Image (cartoon, rainbow, N blue to C red; front, side, top):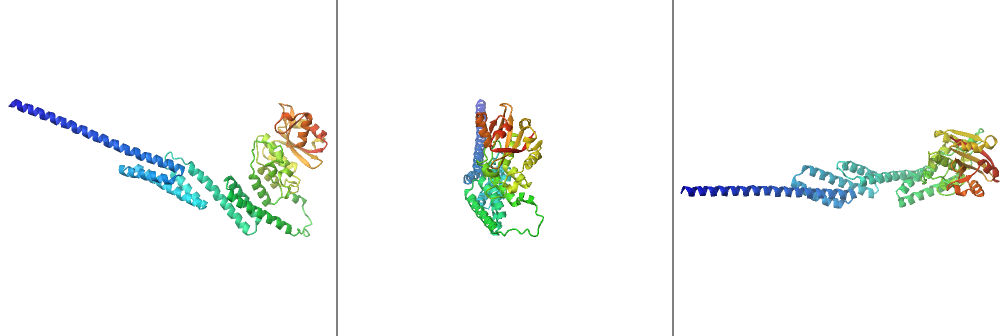
Amino acid sequence: MQQERRKHKHRWAETVVVICIILIFATLSGVFLWRNHINKLHDEMNEHLETAISYLEQGDYSATLTEIDDALILAQKLRDEDAIYKIEIIINLTETQVYADELFFMQDYQAALEEYLIAADKASGIPSFNTYLIETKIAETAKRAEAASLFSQGEQYYSNEKYTHALIYFYSAKQIFLELDDHQNMDLTQARIDVSEQKIAEMKIHEPPADDSHDNTHDNTQDDQIEHSEVILNYLHNSSLDFDLRTLIDNQNRAPANQVRMGSTEGMNEGWYNGCGWVATYNALILLGDPKHPAVIVRNFEESGGTVLGGVFGTYPNTIAEYIKSLGFNVDHTLFPQLTINIDDAIKASRVSILAYVHTNAAHYVAVEYNEEIEKFIVYNDSFARARSAELGLESYTRTGAAVDSIADMISNTRDILISFSLIVVN
């Protein structure tokens, strides 16, 4: 009997142990499955979040909101406060960008710009968020806002028949529309420019002659002065021209050099006609390693009163010398060098020189350098030098410019060149 009881107790103990083991196993399995489920929900939530951010970075807001809604449901299930906060930022950012885009398409660029800047600030709160799209939109919207403002100011002057002032703003707006490749607004602005220039021309025709009867001390130097408004208009136009500041100009009759405007004389203020002075300066500065856009060079010449008869006959030589000197270079300027110095030796000793001479039709400036490697003088933007180079059989020496053995010889042996009147040497 006692043995039976022992056996019964033993079986009961075994049963209890088995039940405990089963319960422990079931509990551990449950915990494992639950943690697995939670991790799976976290993974799904994070996947929705990453996909939403990716769509947002691409500007697909509809897909962004779909993904973010799914992520929010999971975050709420998980009671993940950090994820909910991040999701709210993304939702807010998406709504801001949608609103900014709406303002952009309504052409309210200033308001759109403010919203895009807010969006950029919010995006900074999302780690690893690619802000390229927002930054691109900010840049474009800022340009469009500026162009719209300039065009609007031009319209005000245009409606008040102040066409010269209107042109200043229209040209500025056109330059931005050109950068944006906005042909519609570019054409509209160009139409305003055309009408304004026509009105200015008509007003000049009907202007009464100036009455100088009360001023017997007329200063002839004023013939060289250019109206400030014309200086600005020329600068705006010239700035819109595309120059590779590493490429020398070897023919001022080709674009874009022939389109550069300098001075105030209509029909005679473009590079094909009066541009040799600024072209020689432009070339010299490239050779000196300090290139400047023609718009900058021309504006300096105009503002300093350095154009001859308002640009009809180009630029004074001392203006060119003083400008290069103002840039920090050591400059020597000799008038009528043939009479006083050895031109070839002076150019050989310089880093670059600018020679001016009179020929049978007008006067001309050229940039010249001495190439020690080939032992030749290289003359830029000069048809006489090209002809002389061909006579000597030296055309193959250079791709740009014309190679000659002697500048003094070229001047003396070119029938149409009468005399050199200026030599600017830069060391």
